[in-house]
Image (cartoon, rainbow, N blue to C red; front, side, top):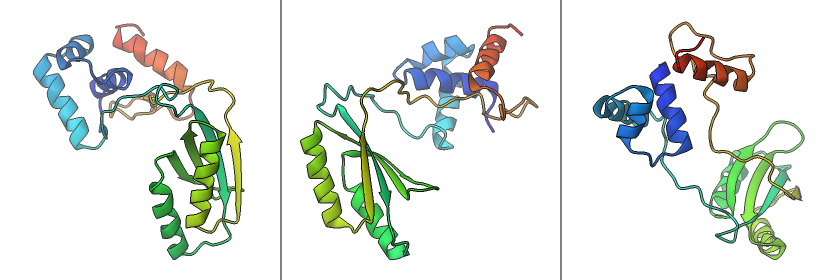
Length: 182
């Protein structure tokens, strides 16, 4: 179970995982060694899965985002495994979800342009039989973050887990408590 200190550390790491441990410790009120130990435990527990660099998609020529909705009429385990293997092989697919509702799968694909998406589409349908594919090109990215909301983390101190409350208000309240307010 995580505690308030873990949540503070996670918030800072989500914003910039390259910050020195001493700086993070100072901000959350820990010395370097205890802060480092907590970070190690969060990694060992799988809370922190990996540390990565977030790239500018335009600067790496992958500035076109396409949301690809896929419907299939085949729901056998064999088809499912073949489809998963095919999709994982495409570096253009940066997110891949099995869905409920009207579509079976949703992919987020990044490419340089429509021609590159067309090539991706042709390679995909050559590898696997799909009943219906619908592609939607993002016109503008309004919000993008890799930071997960931490207001819902149960901290084991009898606090509300955030269920049913506005995450923004819960985070504001948590921030106020961490600064000695509220």
